[in-house]
Length: 500
Image (cartoon, rainbow, N blue to C red):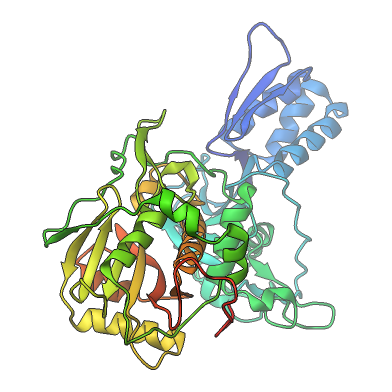
């Protein structure tokens, strides 16, 4: 036998203002919700709901105080709380049941949870259609199971709900890998009725897939979902659908855990080359207009081997795109910066590492541009890892020769993740995009060849640089070099060699 217990979500609370009889305030992750004019039975049932009770027990509480007439109002309120993602539901079995461990958030006398449906985000939550005994179902290919606070939690990307599983119910994940029916599903250690109840929680959390009326798999056929990989859909929904997560944006998840990273990273131990700042006033008088540069912008994958890019030209490009114009301290105490391109919260976590093959005045190897000092720092000599990075870049761009310079863009992840939650990595990718465009426009105005790449090798960059890839890792790459027949300040009239 099993029972189903209902309770307020664990990150919500209940209080009763003494001066207002019949009033209850619910403290939720999304703000307080005030309930007024409640009859005594509803108030008593809400108190019980805060600690957990079965729906039958809650109904009896309401009836004892308000009679049968209060039940309809109570059921409407319970449905509203459920739709607002404010309730948890637990499937409980008698204490000491075979294969069922002790523990769990919801434990009444005589019962322990084998599965708990819990909200992570906010409403609205639409109730799932009841599962018929002969309904064909399987686990969604987008479902993810991960340990959390000592429990296995299963979630689907487009639902604000998840299911916590005790070890006794964990085998269901393997049993649901292929099509089955509730009637035909047997989970060792769980009675058939309990298994069906847990499947009901799976359905509520959006973890189950049912065939279309035509008998097709909606996640693998011609439907739009077929084009998504699980990782891509998770990234998209977590960063673009805030109600799925509950914590979104500038929540400062690491404040009090660690100090924010400074704007400037630690210097590398190798030689340093001070770069000459260009005269922007002179450039502004002679260079093409923004409209002309935008119209002339192209991805150019061929470099002039007879006249390679120079150190001065590389320095000018870096100065005009990446330099740190000033620093300041935000109200949150984080050191912030101003650069020529925008950055969310002014955190400016991106760094650039020129991997040089052929640059007049600069030795080949991996360098770091110290944006705060307009200096190049030597990181590493050419070696197997830098060779792999160049080979991958050349292959991605379909070049027959090495690029003169491979600009590797990295992110100091902690700069963003100290402040932003859920959207941190997607925000970094947005910054990479605006930096790409900044590189494109300045390089075009300077008559240089530039081409952004769609992917790279973070592991090989970590090997080449010696950096911890989880602290600072590569997130973008661009090819850079001299342009055949190119002249600074004269982009109009350039013909596209390879449009992009």
